[in-house]
Length: 145
Image (tube, rainbow, N blue to C red; front, side, top):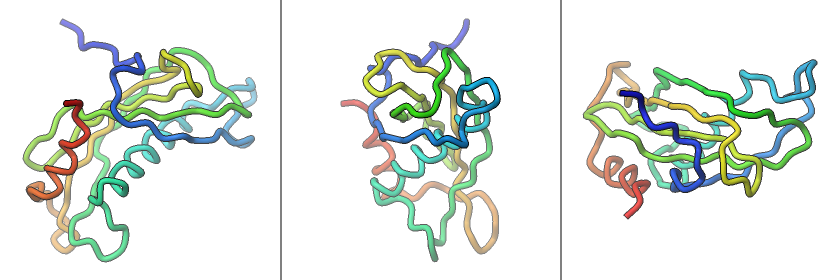
């Protein structure tokens, strides 16, 4: 059985406006594949900061990206305004799996979608650590009620 493709705007709970840049285009005139991973990373990081889970400096717990994937549906190019969607797929003991997508501003269907997995790591030991309850609660706030 295949997993549901998370390509509809209604699949996502949070959206973050992003701008394409001239340097994002490749020689074919559309956003280069690798740039979508940057869009995903920016959106998830924005969510973590907004939720109060990520303090970039001196935080004893850090978020390591251990997996990303991206499925392309349609091209985007500079100059276009886009929105990145984020949703919670799974929260485990030490890891968080997000669904992520990129939409042309206002579009109902994603131009690209994928998965993004964080493992929480103790900064000092550099080992995976249990997700603290306060962070777990804030991350779960991403789930639609």
